[in-house]
Image (cartoon, rainbow, N blue to C red; front, side):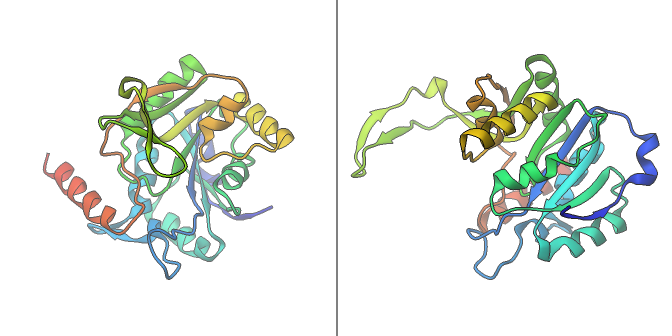
Length: 247
């Protein structure tokens, strides 16, 4: 079934909330490292990247459970991490697939029947806050689909095939999309089925819902909600974390 382990059964009866959080950690981190190092398992100021991510969802009162989707070679490390740190909302650890889309679908197969909403989040986006999660969740309850995002501040150009500017886009309507992306569970299920039936490949989960013909609400987030992609991002994240500690 692809499940490495099931963690949270003892705590199920005590759980509330109707949001299942799928945290994706199954990428190959090729832009981060050339030696197969997982960026989610790198230390930042005394904690691993993924710990900051898990703890934000662990604190959110709307989150009923957390499903971690990981690389097969990292599964044992995640199992130890969860058990040793008391992350009792982590329900299971699932082995991911070849693409982000497949990994999200694998995680979705294991969410609770009691959940009404599902959140998809990048494990490497470790500066997410409880406030951001709650804001996107509340928008998803109202609109059925919502995502964290920030408005573009730079002037954005569209290029032609030879690398020359072909058009200047209206900055007022441009957003940089982040995660979490939260959806009503049945809408997400129907969007997955539509993508499978029509051979639609996506790079984020909003695209699944868009392809199904539904709108996704943009929720203004924080520019500090960055994703660890390259080595330099570690130093940026460390500075933000230390700043937060001092506030």
